[in-house]
Image 1: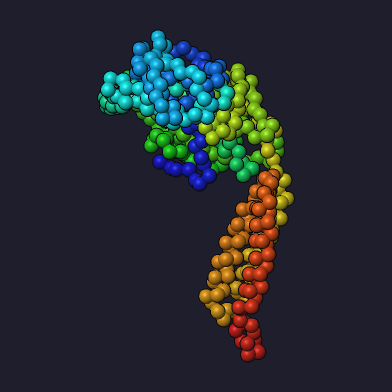
Image 2: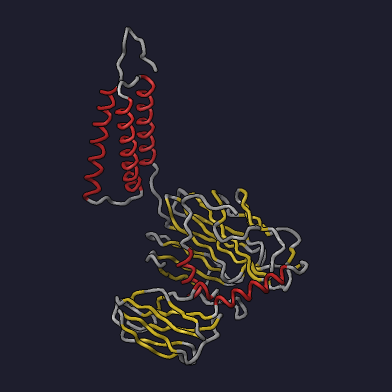
Length: 417
């Protein structure tokens, strides 16, 4: 399986959890979210009173509520208890905003513990504890192994409601992630009569599979190929790529080779950036665990062969002039350095190597600050002072490099190395 180049980040985990919990399914028969992704995680709930936390206890799957279960809430070293109601929820109120909290429960001898989290200053939190995940995973693996041993049958697959398109901005590029669950509802492996092929949008570059993708998936250029047969259940396909743009608007069109049971798209909210599509029915705003805001849109199912048309506007665009100037300066500096290295020998090689290493280190640090300025970020006072010191020290280093080099000798002998 191919892994993505440095720069691809799967921030999907936090935003995916929000998407699965906040976007309603358009089909009552649609696949429920994977409970393991939600186990022990705190989800903001603006409809709850301030200082209120509900802890829902379920067995193996959402909806399989555990009623009358004692739940313990550890609050700043103290323990509060409550029992779950008919919906499997235990409610704790009157908590102080900012307090450190952790939820626990013991179901049939199994200890369930949530992640530690803080009580928010507005609204409340919902937490889900899922019992029997290990047993369910073992049982599912055995069932899948038995099903995979059966001969394949002709059929179709779909992209489940858990599938989503995620986008973020980085270095004047749009990073796009497809997190897709290919679902086969047959009891035996499904043969599509050929591979499942996903042709990425026009302009896609640097496509690579992400960790967690099925080994049967591969990427070549802007094409993702998933070979069959498809085992019963879910086959995960996760791919990342980038789209370059030089204008504040961009249209993305993606054709889906199989039916998409529910449309879910998330875009990092930078400035006034927004997205729209005739296929969207709702567009809202959520925050990832890091606090980064995202626009989250959903829409009804798309049939096999359907195309998602997505319009992005007010994208952050930076002038290329500073970049060209910086590159020119860098080329000039490297050229001067190369000329000196070629034209003169050093009498003190160790001293010159130390100076060159220090020069390269300072240039790298200066380039990092210059990139932040080109992206429109303001430097703090200490950072601006550091920038001036870097320039001054570089001037001194170049002067010292001139002093340690070997000058012309013997009427031109050893002028060139």
